[in-house]
Length: 373
Image (cartoon, rainbow, N blue to C red):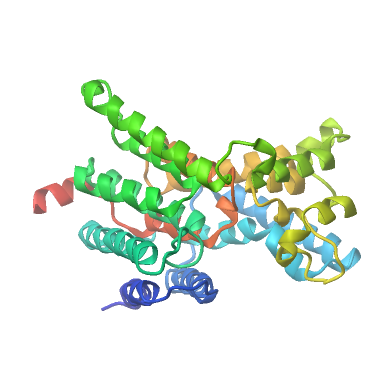
C-alpha cells in the first residue's frame, strides 16, 4: 500500500473518532490541516504546475508576500490575525500542487462516501435522540461539515452520473436534523443540480416534495429565530449591519481592493459584537477583524475587495477545469461554497478544502466504473 493510500485510509479512523465524540474539539480541524499538508508533500514528486493555474499561483505568492511584509513587518499586526484573513490563499497555494495527482480509484471513493454518509446520519440521530443536542455535529461545526458532505455527495454524482434515491433521502435527513439554515439552502441547491434532468419529467412528484422541504426549512428558520421572524434578531442580519457601517463611506477603489491590509473594525463595531469575544484579535486588546462578521462573503469584500473575491472564485474554477471537470461541475462546486459563504467561512474553511481535494485526487473515469459494475 502506498503512503498516499494509507493517508486516505486514516480518514476511516477519524470517522470512528468523530462518531464517539460528542463535544466540540479542535482536534479534527488540526488533523484535517495536517492531512492536507501531508497529502501535498506525498504528491510533490516531480513538481509540476498546470499551465492553466501557473500565473494565478504566481499572483497568489506575490500578493501574500507583499501583504505580510506590509501588515506584519511594517504595521506590526499579529501574525495569527493575518493568517486568518489570508487563509484561503495559503490553501490555494497548497492545493495547486495536487492538480493531476490522481491516485484513488472511483470504486474506493464511492465506498468511502457511503460509509461517511451513514456515519453522519447515525451520529446526528444519536446526538438528538440520546444527548438532546438540537445542533448535532460530527467533527466540529455542522455549518462547515455539511458543506464538506455536500461536496462529497456531488462528486459521487459526477462519478456515477446519478445518485440513488436512498442516498438523496439520507442526505436530506442529515441536513434537516442539523438545524443549519445555510445547510438547508445548500441541500436545495445540490439536490436540484443532481436531479436537473428529471425535474421536468417528474414535476408532479417533485413539487410536493419540494414544498414539504420548504415548510420544514421555514420551521427550522423560525425555531432558530426564537419562534418569530423578527429580522433584527437574526445574528447574520446584525453582522451585515455592522459590515454596512464599516463600508458605507467607501470609494469605488475601496470596493475593488478592500480595506487597508489588514484593518481592524471600528471600536463600536467590536462592541456591538462583544458576545463573540472568542473571535476578537489575538492581541487581546479588545480589537477585532473581519472574522467576527462570520459570513465569508462579507469578510472577503472587506479584506480583499470584489477583485479579491473574483480572484478566489476564478482560481477555484481554474483548478476544477485543470483537473478534467466540466464548467458545469465547477459552477456546482462554487455554488455550494458560495451559499455556505453567506453564513460562515466557506472558502476559508478546511472543510471546504478537504471536500475539494477529493475532486483533485480521485480518478473519476465514469466509463471504467460502469464496465467494472
